[in-house]
Image 1 (tube, rainbow, N blue to C red):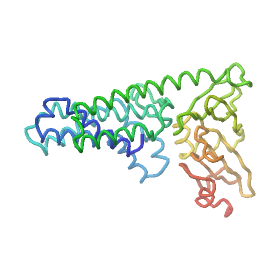
Image 2 (cartoon, helix red, strand yellow):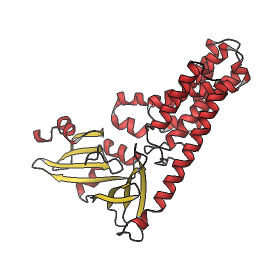
Image 3 (cartoon, one colour):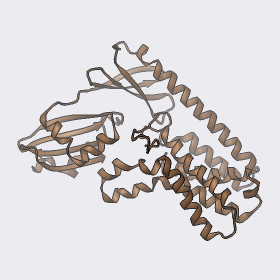
Image 4 (cartoon, one colour):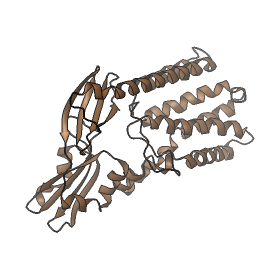
Length: 327
C-alpha cells in the first residue's frame, strides 16, 4: 500500500488495541502502543532509503528482505526495545504484540498489490503479488479516516469503532478476492482468440469495475487489454525482441534489477547510427498508451554500455534523461 494508507492503518491498529484491557487502562501504555503501531506500519518500507544509492539497487530490493519472515520478528523486537528505553516499566509484551501486528499487517496488505513482496524469504525469493487490491484503495483509506475521526471526537468507544472497522475490512478483502478469482477464471471464455497454453493475469486498477488484463501466449507474446464491467477488450500486443543486443543487455545491472523483480518484462530493440537501444518494459503497468516501468540500455555497435536508466518514467522524460539524440 502507499505510505498514507500504511499511516492510517497504524493509527487504526492503535485504536483497535483499546480492546486490550492492559492498553486501555493506562495512558502511557496506550501512547507507547500508538507509537509502536505507527512505526511498525511504516518500517518495512525503510528500504526506500536505497533510492539514494540508485534506482537499480532500490528496485531489486524494495519489499524484499525488509518484508521477509525473519524481519517481521526483527522489526518488532527493535521497535519494542526502542520503546522500552523511552517508556520505563511498561508491559512490553503487550506493546510487542500490537507493534508486531502492525508490522505483519503492513506486509500482509502489500501481498494484495501488483508490486508484491518477497514475503516468503528465506524459503523462496519469489515475488508474491496477488493483484487484488490497488496500492491506493479509497475504501481502505477513507474508512480508516472516518474511524479515526469518530475516535478523536468520541463519537463512540474505540472498542466498538475499530473492531467494526476491521470486520468490514475483512469482508471487503474477501469480496475483492472472490471477485478477482471469479473474473480471472472466466477470462478464457470471454476471449474469442483463446488458445490452449495461453495464461491470463487479472490486474487491479483503482476503479472497482475495471481490471487490466495481461495474456501471455504460448509463443511468449504478451497481449494487453482491460476488463470493463465484465467486457474484455484487447488494446495492445507486445512482441519481445530477439537480437544479440537484447541478450547482451541482460548482463547490465539496471536490466538485471528489472528482470529480477518482474516476470512480465519484454524487450524492445532499436538500431541507431551510433549503436543500439534496448528497452525492457513491465507490461503489467500500462498508462496512457505507455509502459512507464522500464529499464533502458544504450550500447555502441560493439555492445558496450553508453547510458542506462531503470525506474518509472514517461517517454518524454526518458528522452530528456538519456538524451539519445546526442550519441
